[in-house]
Length: 478
Image (cartoon, rainbow, N blue to C red):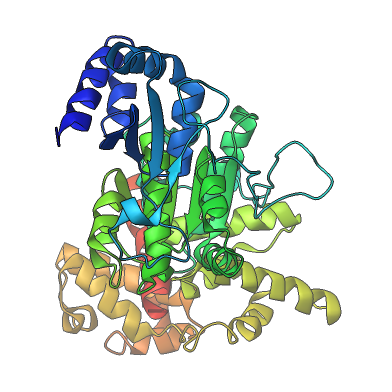
């Protein structure tokens, strides 16, 4: 009968189902396809060599029982690997001709000839260590403790921490982290790896950049060792791949990564990927990979707000044992907005300039250093700019601030504008008064005292003033 192999395997599955839990059955038996039944030997097709080895290691008893019930004591089982040999065209679908059956000579269940086995070649092997051990390729300084949380990255950090506590055991698999360069993706993904190692020393964790991964594939193809390469990666418990977007338009690389991804995911292993854009915007990536990237959680890292940039910079200062004046740190964080790496670069430059030139770290030195990082440094704060910002906040016109109206809302806005002008510009009291309709310096002094009295007694007003001061600085650097 042409379909006899299908019937035999379906009967085997019914037997196996009684002794295997539903999740394991779905993961390890449903993907199997019966190929043929010949000379009392049933050939089944499995996705890859790792799949075959897992069945042999964990389910050989169940397979023996099912085979004996269907084919008797002389029944045999042969495996056929779905993944093509590296010399075979990756687009070929004729797996029956491309890959010979894998068998195990040590058991009467299997045929006598075998091309299975062979030592797994480890692209991260540590010379001199016989037991298989890998270097996780992690920077031990990149941990959760020094990854500053803010509104810009809260979801990504929380998801990363959950994954580290229970790798492969959350709904965040894969965890797909995306955002522009310099926003902390590499720090976060390495923090996950370091935390997993500290919690689960026995787990195999590996961080690899997409560039390194593709170079390894190229070398494995040259050496006819693609299967060894794939088998190695399929043994990883937590795989962290940085900048996955660089797989774009590399079909062979995507084919290999697809098989690795499937096996790890089916085995409940954790996968964490980073990219400069969300899955839906990845051009040149096969749709079947993109759909798998969407299986878990996609979390973005955005440009940090001013307060988070300050916290990040102060954290880096603390680790360096530095105490930099607040006005300097504020100036730096107002100007460096889009890249956390640049904050660290500014700090290193400040230290170097201060040490080599024996200069104190002050605002002047910060201005000199920051010219190498941004095109437009902060402009001078002007009375006119302060008037516009305060007028906008109090919803009055600048003309009224400069006029003679005595309405309470306008008076408070005018007095506050004078106070901020005195505090935040180099203008004299006379020059400030002239910007408010030709008022004299005594009016400016009175206004500043009135504002100070309110600051001492009204916390809401104090918060308003603090907010306006920050907005003046921040808006000037945009």
